[in-house]
Image 1 (cartoon, each protein chain N blue to C red):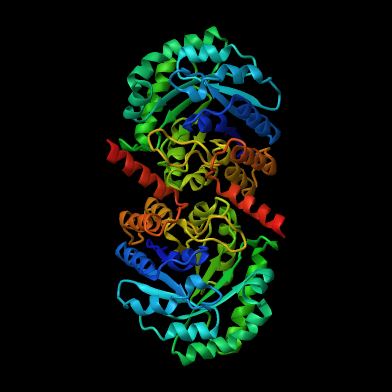
Image 2: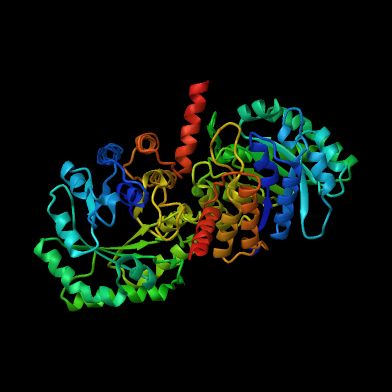
Length: 314
Length: 314
């Protein structure tokens, strides 16, 4: 098992997208700069959705053109349709390898993307053509609401395996290989340690060719414990947000992604390297709080802040 | 390994003690009532400290005399000196078996109790006499700052084992048996899953006669993950606070104990019974927020609240 963990920072995309207000582009860029300085290897910097519908992400082009490709970090733009993918591909600063997005919850797919799993399967041919035209390889498959959904409840391991299997079959029918990464996204915070253990174990047995990754939310307080179970199950790729920002549009007020700095601390305690400087990462969190004005849910951030204020008093 | 977990609720004591303001006695009693209705088996209801120094606990006598002993729940009052123990013993509503309190951090002992580990050892004879006069058995030994302290850093497993060993030796010199329970209190939130695993394993090997319990704080975001590691190591007694209230006087602004409702959810996911009704427990948390006016750190509480508001809107 590898002793390094890849953390994909999604704060600039998922965190800012979940805010009601629109954050200034310069502040977004400054946060990204601080995250790069902290040693993040991958950062999701924007989303190529429709700016009139999602004003928080309307500056995707401005973000992508202001960034400069660099060896130490991969910048990514999220896309959910072919138009978005094409927009993303026009920027050399972004690494836009092929990603496919579906979900376990049909309610979620309908509300979020006016889609369904069947429609997703039908769309695969188009996506593969799209990736080929842009000379991008298929990299990942993300399954949202993988542990459960507030509308439909829990999903079983067998149900998840079936979604993966049917997706792979369809890809193979089109002559495409399996994706490299299978991202398990716990969109509404339904994961728990035991469920992570069991799902990862089932998937690893049935699809040993796929590298599993976890995108966890701390909505019900079990986020970091679930990440721990993921580490124990051999997962070495995680998505998280600096300061723990982010959230799900279907659970207003609920907390967001697991906090990157807490995940980094967990990995360090486990003797796993992330390449991230926790002190510098906390500076990025501080920027979010002070300059962007976000009340951060991260406990580690608040603890370090309180301790540093205490030291200042002494 | 038992499939039931005993959760000792410390919110009414540690939670209210950590607030700057003093909570009305009637509201404290109402919270305790709600906790009893939720099925809590043990509740720390007050602390017999000096009311002029700790005004938050000045109503300890009022709380203890208002409560009525009942079969389904044990009410406890905290005490840190013999005078406090004697005060606690005068109330038939309270189960005040013998507890001994020390800490790994000498700085913490000095600041908190003007004491030291050596003074603690010297005090054991007096404590045993005190328990005997009150016909109480020695039940527990709590070691605070057991994983680390903001002033002194981490403590090793060997250091903790030595503290336990020297305490047991001294107890045996006085002709007393070992305590039944060894409570590992992570006062400043220094625990992590791997450290819980290792410490519990070392202690269980060297002191198989002691039942281990964990008192965890979520100061750095690893509280519930550490509780999970505790469950895996066989720990079946935990202390926690409804709503996640509480905190450490030496880390202002830092979050408090792990939230009881998140711990209950974790246990349920693991297939372990706590005897606690989570819905009723969330009602107790809601009372804390709405009627006592505390901003609760519990993620599960905030999620359930957001979901119920969403349902009301629909």
